[in-house]
Length: 305
Ligand code: NAP
View 1 (spheres, rainbow, N blue to C red):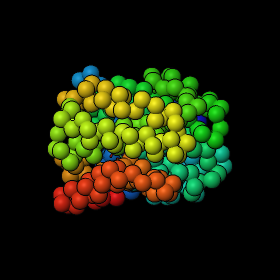
View 2 (view 1 turned 90 degrees about the vertical axis):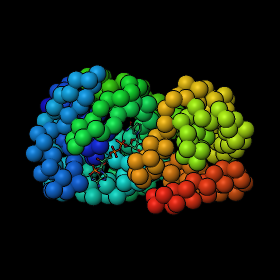
View 3 (view 1 turned 60 degrees about the horizontal axis):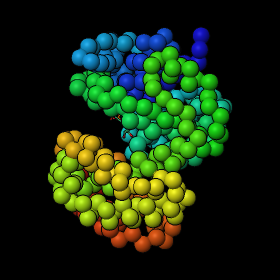
């Protein structure tokens, strides 16, 4: 029997991964917050994945963080602001050399998790797949995409990529995962906060071309300073392409705010501003953007961290 995958977080991406692994016959276990959530999950009979309008139930076994089974491979599928604390509860269960696959958007949470689990190998992921919950324990596979995985410290690909192949999870081992994550973060910083502040779809930013261009300049400067010149290359034309190609979409941050959900701001724009300050880099427009976004979140009664 191959090494089991533990999936921490039965939300959109956690369910999407757990269901596909289980469907391929890979052993998977789902870690839920507490006994109450576990009982609710067990009453539902498993996870439901809706793909091309077709709903299928996958009876993936569930457990709580204090279960005793050792963990060899952990897919961390929480939001960035929950990852560190959620993994902390599992530290006693991680075997030496355990592997943690971190699906969080943005940057900052991965290093926080890695610092508290020095016995583990932490693999960072960046995904363009899209999924959302449309009911309890039920997730819709909304956007087919790709997941890049990499380990900046050890470039050798892990053997379990075969499990992803078997599960039909499109992926690629990346030797420049940090560059990918920084590039995605920069795109996010140039688009998402402005869609919240201007209350518009991505395409609405075509009316704010100068503001976007100024942010791209500052983001490019930041990427150069933090050793990510490749992530800075042609940033502005790509941002403009994304705005055009996704003109009718609402950004993920816009959707979080519209649904009164906490955003991942600290790991996106907040992280960019923090790193700029660490490099004593003066990026006035980026800092102003952060202040304006924080003020907007406060005015809506949402957390700003
Ligand atoms: P989500 O739907 O909110 O799922 C997060 C899950 O983590 C929730 O089910 C939550 O439990 C669980 N959780 C939090 N703390 C926990 C703990 N201590 N113990 C056990 N479970 C815990 O989030 P998501 O959309 O899957 O996003 C996960 C990450 O992937 C984010 O960083 C996001 O930006 C990134 N991402 C998402 C997508 C997408 O399409 N969804 C695409 C690319 C990247 P409860 O249900 O009990 O609250």
